[in-house]
Length: 289
Image (cartoon, rainbow, N blue to C red; front, side):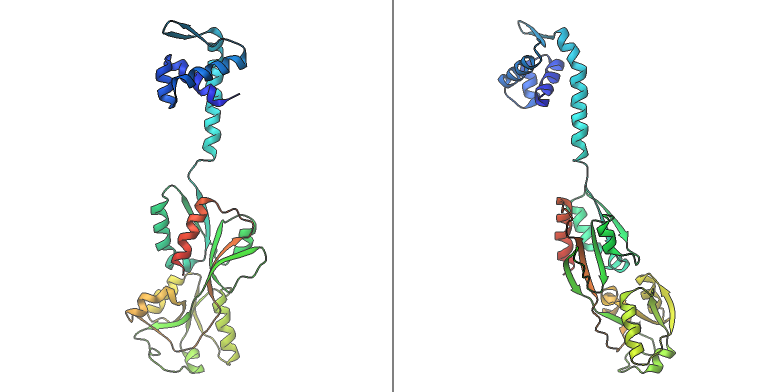
């Protein structure tokens, strides 16, 4: 049964006027007449009685009316299932959520206000596993290069990692660091599973340097603020302290670190890229260059 014919029948039953019905449905009056005749032919009954200009439902039309209303309502419900505001679940590491995502989220939500964005903090969780299981649509991570056959790296940018100290710290401006400096002054560290912490510990160990943790936290913001307060040397991605370095609130400690740490946009290779996700990716890639 043609839903368009049912819609025309239902509208005509309310308006009882072919001209008004055609105007409401945005079609010619002849189309209304044709659709009613086709429906009557399909059902084998007369649905409307026409006496002069007066139109009224026949008993058969009255019987059909509640069913037509119900079917049209169900049709609208089905359509609404696929026309609701979009929702994207984006897995992000804490540093990216705090320091990198603000600008592109602001632009995206200004352009696509009907799309809901849910940021899921990865907190050391396996982003690849979450992509496999469909728990997140996309992952933006600060990590070693991700190499899995089922995971596609859509964009990758190397991020410098620094040791920083308050500008008033004793080590600020020192040209070289000795092993004793690391033993004297504590380091503010991310949690043990952080990839750039692991790389720093391996580098220091190879040089015979014993690390002295002052604080361990999963929050890049806490490390930065503690470093600003002079509590210790902060191990941080450069993007998290750009402003503080420019205004000399923090200083880069002269200890060379060339770690293969990258901001990466990850997606499962079989993930369907919806229009909402495509728009998000376009903006995110531009901001993370």
